[in-house]
Length: 280
Image 1 (cartoon, rainbow, N blue to C red):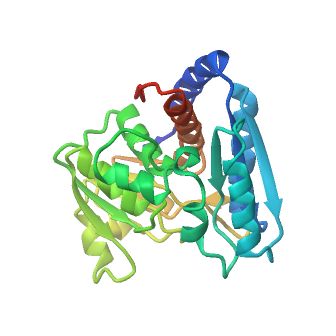
Image 2: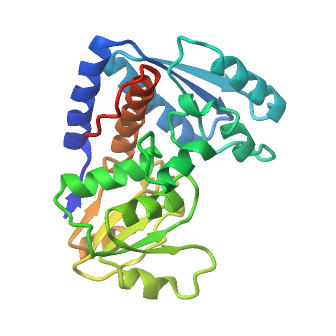
């Protein structure tokens, strides 16, 4: 059974609209290059912003922009008191240091929760913004009644954007977490053992039907483009059909990630005003 994120997204959207009515917010996105998946994501952020009444400024830079130019732009945005949050869109063109640039963003304007300070707060179980895609994974599981406590969760992909912070967040849900990567010796053995399988690699159809078991829950984070332009995930249709439930691509994690990004923006605004986090 395929599961979708639209209903959960609409609940988050309604909550954000109520908060925007009380206090205005704005977000800036820094994007270098014209990666197709990246542009699709940015457009979805702009649309969500229009829907909830939040201004989204996209600062588009060419592929050959220097790291120094982007860092200078980030410093200027940090100093803008009217700007609630800043986002550095990935992937970056080759030669640009993502860690340096994301940590140039003031931690209290880091809408993606990927600044080292915010990741440290995540590790120490403090309140604050958390990476939006891992938040979306947790939300879709909760929204569809999937129990995480005591379950064996296998995450394929250890990036700092998805896999690594998700492992921490799943541990906080009292799951037993197995984090796989390119050096995992027998990936199929690990994925078949999972109660919940999360795949976030960016390789189309990486997970085949023989790599999953029938009663598992699959969360497909991948966004890839087939030769015919179709958006496909990291998990094959055959593997999803075999599972108890699996997130759709498109329509699953992607639509929720955008909503969770704006939820983070609301958290930043409340932090700026000295209010509590008020988790959903």
